Length: 243
Image (tube, rainbow, N blue to C red; front, side, top):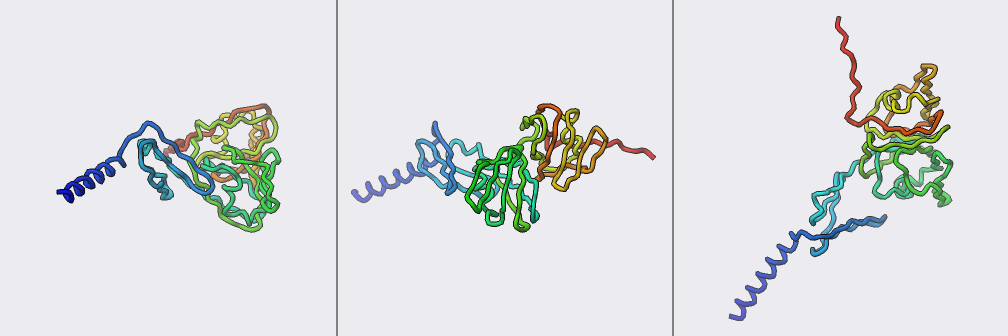
């Protein structure tokens, strides 16, 4: 009889433990550092967070609000590059974002002249800024993959001052430069890419063609403006010719 009672007690406890894993709680949080991440809910046993490259999955009431992970691969040439990304890194510190290629970096500069100089452990940039462009000097060609959540270009307005700025491109596909910056077209003096090609609307000069994901651009404005890129779903319609 005693053995039967113990078996029954263990069965009830085991069943309770299983059901406890399905408890919906009133509080939760997600915390991440350079060494790992922790996801928890109040009133529930801790379970491991799983990351498969496409998303972060955790047990708990907040599981339906999964973080969609997108990666943007930048192809970097030897020497100077002008770069940007449409990714919002989960950990935006430049040391962490550029850690995979740190040994290959000579110097990284933002539009204000602040530098990240890994050889001397100098970081005056701090963290990546969405919509910013950067000048990156590489010892040799390399590839950098930046992962996080993808920006929504049509809701990520960039505030630009009068004069020169170094801007990023927030769309995930190319589009003509005149379309990309149509929201501030009348105030643009000149736009330059990393190769020195220019877009000079006053003179009708367009040597750039399309703005490209991963590239940074130097822009000079007549007055302070707010730049908003078209949505990723935007498709430039062309008129069908009849012959």
